[in-house]
Structure formats: structure tokens, C-alpha cells
Length: 245
Length: 388
Image 1 (cartoon, rainbow over the protein chains, first blue to last red):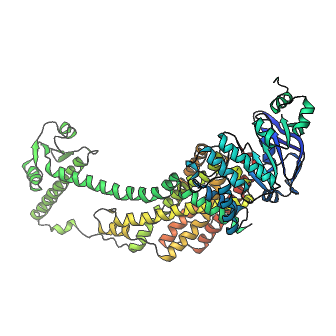
Image 2: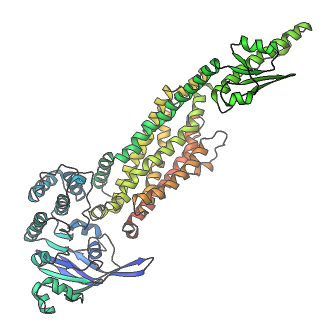
Image 3: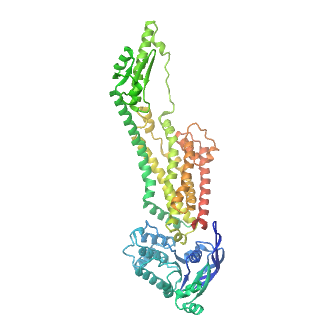
């Protein structure tokens, strides 16, 4: 599970001075739960996810992922997570299988386990047709499937997904959503950010809305409805940003 | 530090680099094609231009003015066709004559266009004919006075070069091998380093890599080793290409001694081993330094602007190190790049002392260590990695 306590991240910007990207954020995500982090651009979603993935060090506060502290045990944390950045991050000159094999090695998986997991994910995400093609020749959807497969490769207990369906066509987005649902069923702890309200409403057990680096609210859809008096997530979201729906 | 992690990163980087066209061009094609092109094609071209000039100089007439019969006869006897001319300068510049000859009292003036190889060759033929005439006249005068012509040559000067072909070849190779190797190492490593550092940032693959369980140091070592491989590969290809090119080139012109010198490759197993030991810490130094610098950039283009001055900074000490006449002292062996260049020269000449060799190697190992530490610190700096 993920436990975030008073997480703060400050950036020193030479032009704008010090800037609080994440301001005292606290929340929890349990095993077998999907937690959606929503927020407008620049709200602090990606920074929060990057801090939890140990790519950035928090200025103050901390978090534990599956019992490991992000400040004191970053390497242990990275063994527990599958992280998908908003930009996919695939090596264009390598094929999906080569990419998966490389990340399998980095996760300390032996040859047999790598082969078996790669086979399973290639089948599950319907990647057989392009698994041996250089990634720079693939469509956005194919690339995103590869990125998702890489994230799930070592079967980590925690998945951190930054806008996993961004820019995808409907069938590919559906495949990704199915993979998320399957991961949840397997008892994974999923933290993910998105701009797609319908997707969040459909997939997330609980939702947190972040704005200006502060977590405005967390709760189930029902709790959010009660707190805001709005029905649809889009309306809830906009009301929390103090914008007229 | 886990070896399997380092090996995985290294192998991935090498696979990635071998599929990158730009890396292959800078690492393989440039040394394999550029050096033979420079040495063979250019020397053959120069040689052909000279031959054509000599042939043209033989067939073209020389404009003459106010010549005495003796001078005219001497020129004609040498196979030079002469044609009368009024304005010799104009004739030479207009290329209606290869050169011009004008006699005025005791002075014979040769008019030539120094920028035109044909004119220079023709002028040289004229000078040789006039020298022969002058010599004949002196001998005739001496004979008339009852003096032996041997007074003209009271003694002859002979040069006896004790260096031998191997050492002379060492001198020639030493002046350029270190420079070429160092230059090609840094230029050959530039693109691979950019690709595996700022290239990762630009292609947005860095986050995924950093989120994997590999330690930052393991990533830097894996990438550093891959960069070193690229750098070494460039050095070896440069060396091989240089050897083959010199063997087949016409460098040294018509002089057998000079041609032998260029074709003698002073590289036995011991010499090669010494050069490799010299280059090894330098390759680590180059890879780490370039990684640290390239990481600061936001784009590959920006990294290129950062690394080009480094290349310039390598050229000067590498060139200076190959110069003859610099007395190698232990203090000079502390200057990076320069020390490697001068020690390679010493190795090829066979006069590198073990003290200087050891100081150079240890100094470069220390610089390599510092550069690696800087590269690791840079890689651990989130402000640098996520600079946008």
C-alpha cells in the first residue's frame, strides 16, 4: 500500500524564484484499490508521482510504498513499483521484446521468468503482431501497450501510472483499462493520474483532486458528491477548482 | 554495486548505439573512410596534379627576350621549346607561356607564376638548364686558367642518419598518432555520449530508467563503459585505418627513404600494449567528462554546443604533445591529454621512460576518477536530470 504524509516539493526556479509544486499532500492507497489523482495542468500531479517513484526527493514529508520509505530506501521502493510516465519512455531503436527484456534484467528477473512474463503480457495486451518491430515504427497505441507491459513486467505490488490512456484511440484505451482492472483484481495498489473524468469515475475506487500543489479533497465518488453537492465528476472537479461548470 | 545491472545497461546501450546511424557514422565511417580519403586520395591527387604540371611544363613554350645565343642554346638543348615574347609577365599570367626568361647583362631573370604548378615546374627546368650552363662555363674558365675543376668540390658532405628506419618512422608516427588518436577518441565518443545522456532526456526514456531498481552509480558505470567502448572502437579503427592507408599511400614522394619511413609501422605487440595502457584511463576520463557535460544540456543540440569547445580544448594539448623538441619532465606528465600525446610519441620513438609513463598513467587515472565522480554526482542531481 501507499502512505503519503505531508509530502512537499519545492523547486528553485531561477526566473520565478522558489515554487511549491506539492504542498503538504497526504493520502493512502490500499492494496486492491485504484486511487485517481486528478488536477489541471501544473497542479502537482506529475511531481507527486515522480516523488513517489523516487525520481525526485521530497523537500519535506515522506511516503512509504509497500512498507519502504521513499527517502531512506529509494532502491527498495523502486523494486516495489511499476512506473509509467506520461511520455511512455520507450527506446525507439529497440523492439518491445528487447525493451521488456532489458527492464526485466533491471528488475533482477531470471531468464525463464522474463520469458514467461513477456509472453503473458504480449498475449494479454495483444502485442504479438508488433512485439518484434522497432518501437519507433509503432503507432501511439502500440507504444502505450508496450509501456504498460514494461510497467507490469515484474508484477510489482504498486503501480504508478501517469495519464496511461492519454492520446489513445478508444480500443487501445479499453485494453489499457482492462489491464488496470485486472491488476486491481490481482490485489495491486494503483495510483494513477488522468484528465479523462469518465475514465476516473469508472475505474477509481477513490479520487483525490489536487490544485496548486494542495490536495483539495479525497474520497469515493459518493463522498465527493456529498461534499460538493454535485453529481458528475466533471462538475465536482470544476467546483473544487472554483470554476463555474 | 551489482554486476548484472551494469552488464544489462551496458548491453542495452551497445545494442542501441549499433542501431543508431549517426553513431555509426561518427564511430565507424569517419575513421574508416575519412583517413584513407585524406591520406590516399589527397596524396594521389596531389601527385597527379604534379605529374600533369610537369608534363604540361615540358610541352608548353617558354617566352624569351634578349637572350644570348649560349643561353638560348642551353635551354633548347634541355628540351625546352622557346618562343620570343615582348611582355613576359603578361605571357606567363595569360598562360600563353609556361615561364619567361630574360637576359640583361650578367643577370638572367626567370619569370614565373608561383601559384601555377605548370609555371613553377617550367621555371625549375629553366633554372636547371641555366645552372648546367653556368657550371659548364665555370669549368671552361678554370680549364683555360689551368686550374683543376676539382677546386669546385674541395670536399663532399655526407649525412649518416643513425636513427634507422624504425626510429624515423617512430618520429613521424609519434608526431601525429597521439594527436589523431586523442582527437578521434573525443570526437568519436561525442555522439554516443550525447545519445545515451541528453538523448534519453530528450526522448523521455530517462524517467523509466531512473524508476527501475538500478542504482544511479550502476547506470553511470553501464553507460560509461558503453561510451568507453565507442571511444576505444573509434581509436582502434583510426589506428587500423591509418596503418592501411599509410601502407598503400604515396606519401614520401619519390624518395625511397621517405617512402620506407612512411610505410614502416613501428607497432609491435609491446608498443601497442603500452599505447593501450596509456589510452585506457584517458578513455574513462573522456567518457565520464563528456557524460557529465552532456547531462547538463536540455537537448542534443545544446549538448553539441557544450562538447564542441571540449574538442577544441583537446586539439591544442594533443598537437603540442606530438611536437619534437619538448623535453618531457614529470611535471609535464601531469597535464591531461598533453601527457598522453607526448608519452605515445615517446613510446613510438622508444625513449619513453618508465617514470614518465607511470606518472602519465597514474595522473590520467586520477583525472578519470574525478571525472567519473563528477558524472555520478551529476547523475544524482535531480535539478540537472529534470532540467527543462
